[in-house]
Image (cartoon, rainbow, N blue to C red):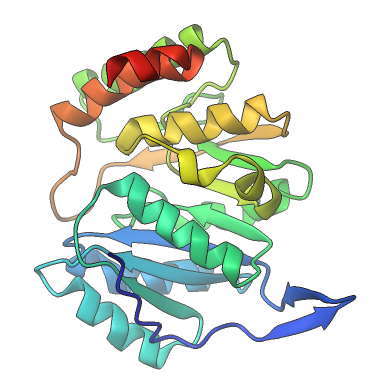
Length: 261
């Protein structure tokens, strides 16, 4: 069960030919779990990067008080909103809850990013600009000009190997299929049947991008440098990796999903 307490002000809505049109074009969905140390600086950096975005913090009942801090920030800053969820259900479920809010409130663009500064807010203006000609913009570590900072060879191999493995099985050309820094046009999220998304973690990112491609939408990769988190602990686990390895086969061959249950 989701518990939503909207402590930030909702962006005003205008009516145009009978439809709801947002005055602010984009919403950054920012999932959090025990990100108290990061939340205030990342929120401030996002809002400073561009005045074209609002922020939705989706907190999964963080025991460290992240949700309470989010409420405090939202009371001070009308561009910040908060969605409280009672249980930790994984990154994918948190994003889906945030997407539902973004679509309901009429945002034209919906962005994903991490709360730990591994996704630098300085790239937001470039992603919004590219979204004028693409339906999905991916902040990519694996195209020319992109890369990672302060990663060991093992983690770098896992990331690049995972993307290579997934794009080989799925037959797509996107270089960074596991990347989680994205900007969607609302039309994409409306078309890819979010209610049927099965995966979380790395596999969630692969599944959304693959569904976008299969629907014929335009995908562009923008080079970014992906840095290791500043504070706190990584949410990566062996279970997330195993899920990604298995899930790409059921994405490519949907009949396998029924057999695996």
